[in-house]
Length: 430
Image (cartoon, rainbow, N blue to C red; front, side, top):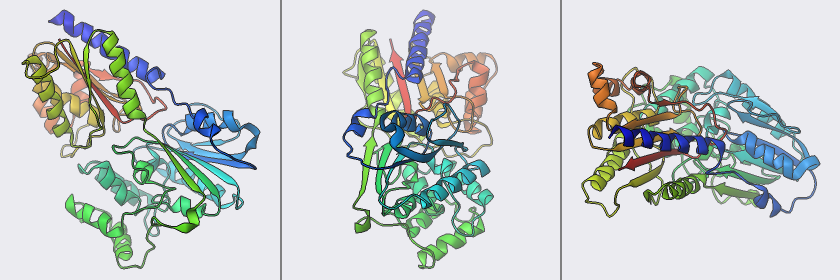
């Protein structure tokens, strides 16, 4: 058993290595750019974890046609020749995010009518590119983001609220650039690949409303916890005293075009092909998931145990692959991220279940507000913890998965990868 688990760990570590290096998914925008019929000056804007790489490819393709630009990223992973790089913070917007957002907005205000604007958007932009709505202070916006991310709400629900308390989301940048040829290149990090949701949809019309944002806060019992200024602003919006975001059907936007790239499914399929070559019988989830950590962990473990008990069509050695974005309702005061919590949930569920290992990995390299990307566990992880007098259930109850995995040496640390293709889970069963 030990030999097989060690072998599985090496395979999963290799998957992380190849995912980080881009072997499973290499972003190539040149074919898309070649379809664009652009004459005149090009302005390049962007925000998100992959925005620098996206802007770099645009620079390579358009060269001297690019007049100027700004992208906002969590780190300056590489310098650009024609575009300024500003750094911001994720998942919560601190002063650097807000000041960088003002700089991008100011530049956008001075782009001449009729010029072409390419906007490179990827995951993380809700925090990196945001200006608090009228009357909301930065620390109040930050508190709202923290409440939302810890509430258990889906990313769709979270971003409906976020784009109603920020002046940049919900199509407001698109409205500012309504007289320009605007091309939004969007790398999806959300289940369903809805451009209204990705990065809070700064350049696309918003079909949601202030009323929906209010109902979401009520549903997750946040309305009384949210800062007073935000309650005031949302109330004004519901009564027509604050402007709604631009809505679909706006004829002024006829020169706006959107290209959404769904990289997560490509990544999952390529991981599957790799594991097939390693002699695993592979099953890749047909769609991305969007559910709580507990629900997706239960689903994954149930399907893995079905393979072991021969109730599945899939036979050993088997590999199950999933991708998507889960939610966590934080009730404890511990440290962790959704991938680390999913892995801890799974470790408890598969305890002692023969030869099973699981990888849960944030493809951007940043799982929650931690320095880890996720975790690799197996059916012996919690058994070993109990021998050390470590209770996995206590860590799970306190939302303290990071410190559990730290003690058990099961953390994955890759650093920021410069990409964001949802979360990836791989289960190996022998």
